[in-house]
Image 1 (tube, helix red, strand yellow):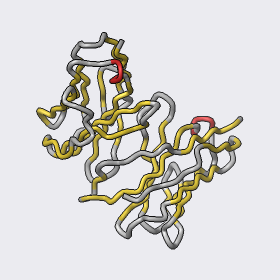
Image 2 (cartoon, rainbow over the protein chains, first blue to last red):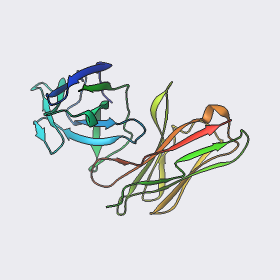
Image 3 (cartoon, each protein chain N blue to C red):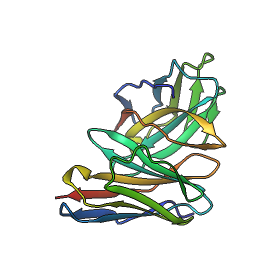
Length: 113
Length: 111
């Protein structure tokens, strides 16, 4: 599986967009980029995933560079409840289901009032 | 919709005792995963099942750990005998054709 690199921490002002970067320079053609987050004392929560096209859902947008070596998760209007550790994971989707998610250390996003 | 349900939420016991953690996956999901999270090692996969059959248990730390899935709606993770280094938060997750959904975990403390 491709390795991912994320900054250990970031700050964001409440109401502003939070842009969380992830490098995955060794990503293979059949590997997806997944984003999860973990709010303190809760289980990880799925946010979004993509292969090569940009994706958007009710939680966030995912921008993947054309060479697929990096991506950015965008929370358009961060709130205090978005304070969490955000994990970027690269994984082949096997039969439509993702197996063996390997979590790194992630980025601790602190949304400031 | 009910999510992944884990019990108990907290468990405190003395070393040497048997510990059983329980998980009810989301109905219709055919994959079930057990993870462990510690400060030192982060979030690591222990074992996962597909259609109630264990597929990969390479993350199970040692023979003191065992996991079963007797039916599609229930799984257990057992530690016997327990040791202080087993103290961690244990998460269960399930998935179907999409991403994994996690429970809120069991915080286990072995004294």
